Length: 299
Image 1 (cartoon, rainbow, N blue to C red):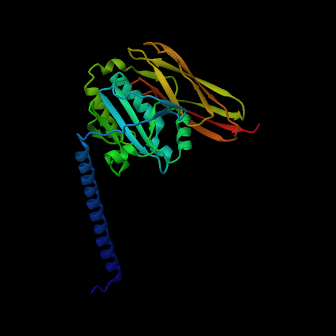
Image 2 (image 1 turned 90 degrees about the horizontal axis):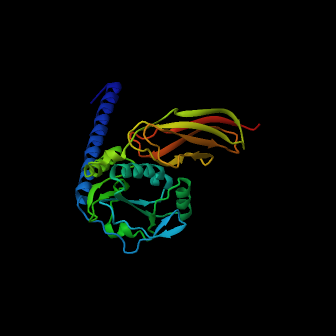
Image 3 (image 1 turned 90 degrees about the vertical axis):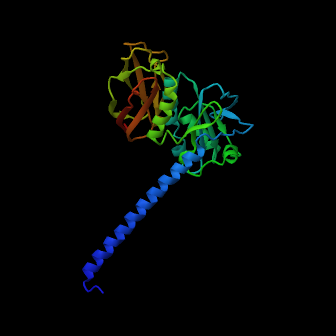
């Protein structure tokens, strides 16, 4: 029996740490095995779609959507329980769609199946993020029930071939490696994809408005220059606050030409702010995010 209580405590702590480390390694290995088994189980499996799939744009129109013209399909299923905005990540999806279109010439179909918790919140987020891509509101959770999708929502996005067979699985929005995998597979069948790329720069990364008055509009302009050798098209943008309005060029910007982006800020609140504007285009690398800062006063 140990006489020294200090030595006893040290030995206890040592073996306790060994136990914790051993369990962490075991859990980590177990988790990796579960991931590998999930991937193996789904690769090559055919996804079955519901017979009746109703698509809508921002909840305002029921639209017919033909999703059978592309060589590939990217299907994502979202159960919007919990933090709906966190799960949807619509601004990141817009960016990913734009990037995929640029390397594939628009030959990839995107299928969004949403099992809604709160329809009103769902449509609000689509309007807030200017998400105009058709989505299927799957109120009966039919896609999940037909295919018995994995419980882990990291495996609710699939890259499919023309026969709806799974080529790759994983969420390209939350996992950069999955994003690179999807794009490499798509780009591998499109040797002329570089034709769709160009490169652009913006003259400054942000603007400090300083102290400004509430309820008064303020603007800042930015010069975007196409330094590539094919036309640059800025297709859309996403803002971090409704108090921001953005004017982007309507037409493509020719090689070596310059155009102007105008950012307007106005609010009725007296606050200090730091807001971001993200752009979606066929530039590679992507156009940088612009940050605006300032302090709104009462006077």
